[in-house]
Length: 148
Image (cartoon, rainbow, N blue to C red; front, side, top):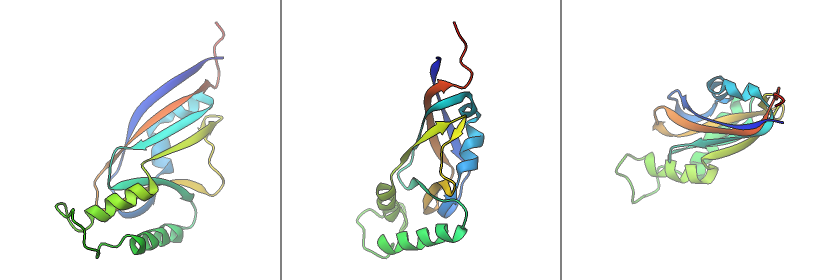
């Protein structure tokens, strides 16, 4: 059986503050996933004021509720020492640490092995965070391995 690695960077379009479903955007950015019968995909967000999560992919109210709850846990109104980049910056760093900047997702038959109601979120914690880079690393076994 042939196994291999793939690594690339997907640049996610700039999004406003909130929890955004980006599964399709990541899949479009890494068409190579279709080449793997079985494997592991590691997603690493190269930013300190946003995060990644897996959650409900159907009802947008879940994403709005996640934003509301997260803001109540880490409010901007608190007094922070680090304020050089604006009132939303330090809370964004805290939220990023709470959710984390990486995910590991299994690959089955050339696609993410997500559950029926699961999707990949970009959790944008800044009011205007800009585009975000996700390093995608895949390791696995080819779908149609060539015999040597």
